[in-house]
Length: 96
Image 1 (tube, rainbow, N blue to C red):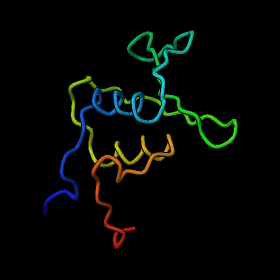
Image 2 (image 1 turned 180 degrees about the horizontal axis):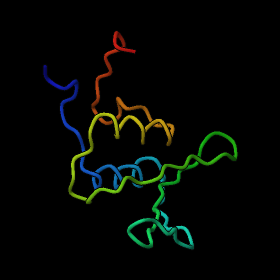
Image 3 (image 1 turned 90 degrees about the horizontal axis):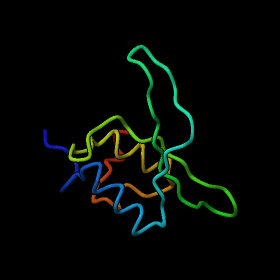
Image 4 (image 1 turned 60 degrees about the vertical axis):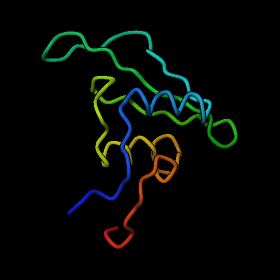
């Protein structure tokens, strides 16, 4: 079975498009978290939502050149209030 998309973006392509087309900003909040592998930093993408509400997505721990999976792309789009179709994803509604 083939995936239901024509092209999935890399993490860098996704971030660049959210910034250029949707007015998003990539932020590195102050502070850090300590985990089993030591300190970890969390990066987020933020964009304005309806009214004064902001949409925030925590960036996945991927390299900038890694291609996003359909699941990760859908999740980021949902968190940011962006239609997955805007990234050439064709959603198969029969599976939802």
